[in-house]
Length: 414
Image 1 (cartoon, rainbow, N blue to C red):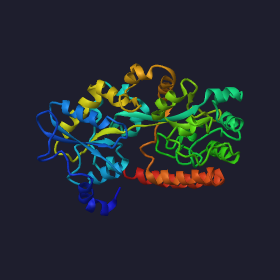
Image 2: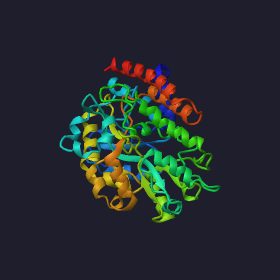
Image 3: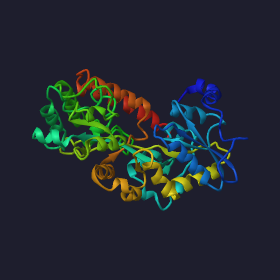
Image 4: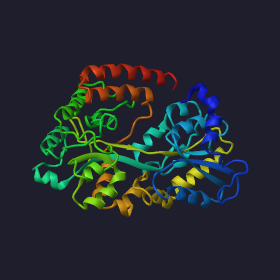
């Protein structure tokens, strides 16, 4: 990721981020045996850091040191994996380049007998050529919140199609309230491939080809453009889409946000809200729910690969009590294991149960073959279509050419 300069400067970057590596004379967990270092990105949820340190201390077969990493975590991890000072175990989403470059270890055997219990939408991006390179930890997801009372007063049904969403946003817009909030840029930065999935399309097919070279893609994105033209979108809110404050303050009747916001919404509005997946579009469409999950991965160049794998199996496969605790005791996430999500008390009822069902039935994640090059090309086009009023057909033709070339490049390395 950082190129040749990043590899050369990695030692300085790591030193700047903290000297506790879990190696040498550093203190480890409460176990005996080999020393293992484990990295996590810095969560904003109180208690999470203490929880993962408690898990590590409970492991008896190795001395596990946890390192909490502030800043650009993905960049730090990519740099560390190019050196001899990287972590033994790390939280993250191994990239295609890291997998093809032999930087992460094959964890397929760790899921023997339980693979089918992991949500397939979040397991797929951690799978390459039939092998698993990361064990999903928790699921984060995004969906549509709507205010029940505002829809009822306007005589609007919760929209289940994209056409109905466009219509509802217009009918719910008044002098004081906008119909829909998709973010301060009209959804260009957050929606990603979700509208394409709602049209029955994919970013990348199972055969590794462009999955949206179809007229339906342009028709769907044109409807997002229509929302912007009709002035039914809230733009310039005090906080962006990830924060539910615009919805809670009554600035919008519907808002795209994440599961993390649900406890705050429920506390403020009681039962005066509902949740929906992104609505389907067209006869081949289906509801769409974007999901993502960091996983636990092992550094292939670790001196303790076998011990690191044993620890990952213990924590993220065997200790289902810790997995549920990690997901729901500090923030609000869905456990990556289907069985845990179904039985968790906090997810059994109301809107939370609806979200679990949406995620199981309609969840989709960004494909592993969807590289940063493809993402940038599509994202730029989506921004021009939604905010700039550009022609969806011509923009997508350009994106298809760029993504096809990138997939061809990637296929040459497989």
